[in-house]
Image (tube, rainbow, N blue to C red; front, side):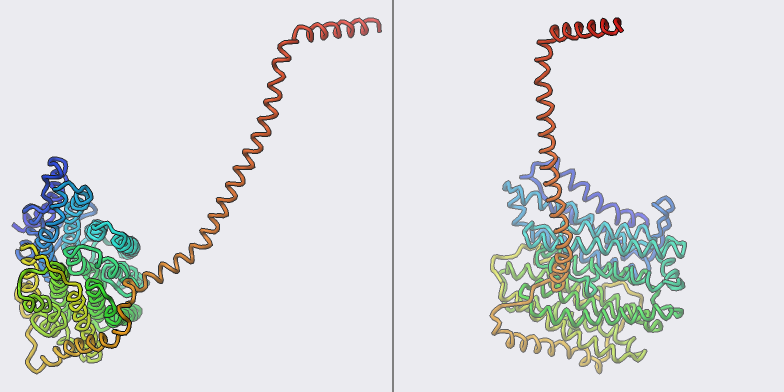
Length: 590
């Protein structure tokens, strides 16, 4: 049964993509449905697989040998990933209803966009599922690369100039990340003579240059995880991507980088070397810098999805710091990782519902406005740790840190949660400013409502090991909840202080524009050299043409004498004969 579910989890999305392509050629575009029940079902086998139990598969015929596994880490990871993909698919059915109507009315641009999205959506899902269950390097990298490059269609969907910029930023950073991951895998696998992720972890632990291997892999996966400096694609891509695409990008796919770190770094090992511990400290500082820096920059954004993108960067910064503790303080990792998984799962569903909520505020249902805005605010309040699963997930990571006496990190994470509260408050305010009526499709608001419930009740459905997560005691509630009201207060104060700016904001993408300026400056001498080569080429062509004209003139004059020679050949021959005869006579007389 488990093997059948595994086969369906991987083959069903591939079959859905194949059916989508076959249907595009079989049916006229005006009769084509892009979001059928079959398309929606692409993720269902993977969701069933997550709840079927733990299992291990060895497939010798698969590439270099496949090692796939569902364990205490991959099961909950697959569960929240598959659930979010399924909800986002239903949301997409309603979200794209108007665009599908245009396609069926004969709009060729809409037809092209929807076909591309419907084809590459299940392939992106397939890559995400494969990397979660993979335990060998080849399968993991295949899944990661497939997910990365197929997701380009999710970002560039609208085809606008802004969408092309966001997709270009995403693709450039994706290529950089894939190169770093491949280099890190080849180095670590070659050093340890292994084909599995476990072998990579063990090899990094004992290798002389293990910290450099870890750095390559950390940066490569950090592109997807939004690590500071490599995060710039997120605030450029999210505002232009459709809401369901943003939901899976920020909720599920961004977690692939986090899972990559957990899979390849020797977290929790007592034999961590000094260089690896120092690398862990660097990773910890980078995570905290992202947590605070993204919050400070994000509150000045006007687009609600750009604010939410910076919120994802900030939250992933917190998770980066928690992963780093597995290298800095290995003894805390066995207690910390279940809380981190719950944190990731709750963030995935909460952030997915927040991004879906942006489409709800753009097409408000005909419900009482207080009810709509209360529902829009719920996942943000939970994300800040004030209610529901957010409170439980915060305690799930704070409790081990308390137990191992890392109070300073707890304080920093609490203040980072203040930034989260400020960001979700600003995002909600921006949604209110940009709200529109028009009514949402039932699939659209239905998936959104289910995502909110799933976010608030994450510990109840996530298949974590029994007893690994507990409710926080009453005496700790204030210490968990206080960042939310403080963050809302800071957001209100910031709004009052920035009113004189009259809508002027910092550009989304922050360091992207610095990178672009630096690259443009570096290209100036190369462009000048290219222009010089172009001028030299033009001058050489002109000189060659003139030389050719001169040579052809001489050849033409020579050819013009040919007719004269043909006309006087007989007379010239007679003269030559007379001269030869005279020469012979003169020679004879001598």
